[in-house]
Image 1: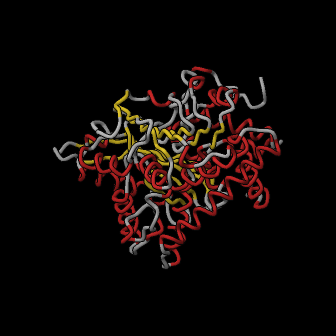
Image 2: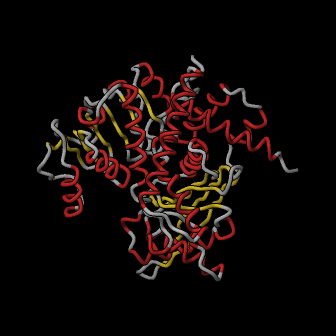
Image 3: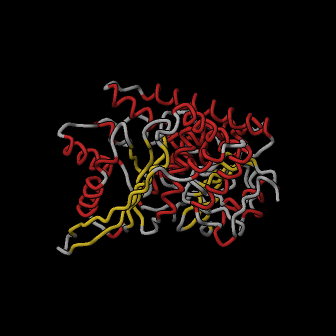
Length: 425
């Protein structure tokens, strides 16, 4: 077994916490990380579980379970989204919090990592029920969040409106308006220009950089995007406008394929009208997830975790894999992709455009001065390209794959700060 092969039982392959821990262990071993710091960084700093009473519209009282995990605050306030889903687990939130620590460190912004989640099915809840749940969840976390403590953001099934409710609830408790308590807010209440498209824009930027390694041109590069939510749709739209040939869009309810390229702007309009990508006349309908293993130059998984596993990794035909989602590839599948010489831009780098622009929003809120969108995009472009170069150079220097290189860069930056700060006793 190579040092880059995770010691992860196959039955635990899709456990995100075990997957990130396995990759962390490989990188820490490569760095010869001190045993004590290894223990400090491997586990979250704080895990909070809350049980949220909410009166439903029918008058009944329901209890929802919510989590907030703060993995690290060594480099600055914790930072991370909040997701609403019936599938939320503490292990998932732990993994996402730790990924946020490494993501912020990879792009060298002064945040630690956190993540939150509430076990609920937002599709079965009214707007007023979601608002009451969000506000009570915020109140339960009041002493643990704040501009200098922990700054939430949107994630799966949460949005600008959710952040507005959180900001208002926190502000009411503080008796003053505190815009910097969350990012991903509406622009008219302290949100940043360019934030909505930022993760997709970052995916586009690192894809541009990856193409240089293969001497590929945008116009001849065939791209398949799995997931057409905020990240996938914006990445596809921006890349289409830049000249990329988007030949496939893969969604949970069906996919679209056109070898000559899909008109993404027309597809966005179709989805806005119908609520789905299905039925679009500009491409052939294919089954859900068939496109993951279709022939292409660039594959962008931009939906959920664990879509590339030992079951399908050996069938991936892309030359370049850009991870727009968090944890789309399992740790056990990494070696399969490496054996196929697939160039992987890992999630903690590829989708860091969102948290980078969230950092810009936090800075603007605290300054009370807001930037033009061109400035936001220019700063994001610089950080993503320089971070890509740092990771790929590190991978070449230390003979590791890009994922382990990204972890090593991130862990090294965090442990250096902990060493300098010392351990308070």
